[in-house]
Image: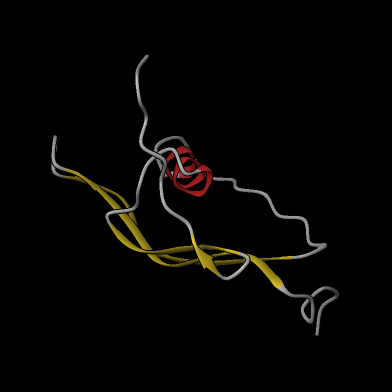
Length: 84
């Protein structure tokens, strides 16, 4: 058992996918991720693998096409961007 595995989940993604109609592109496909209190995580990978898309979904800037995003157990919704 690793350190921090008993700590509570703070942020969870369950089956998160993101598709874009233009170009028929599937940027993410069924991502499951749990970030626990006190843990350190990083997102790495080659250009074009979906890192920015994942982080935008986690930040609430764009909604996932499928799956759920939970912040401290509460469903998180992407915030609609409004122009002033």
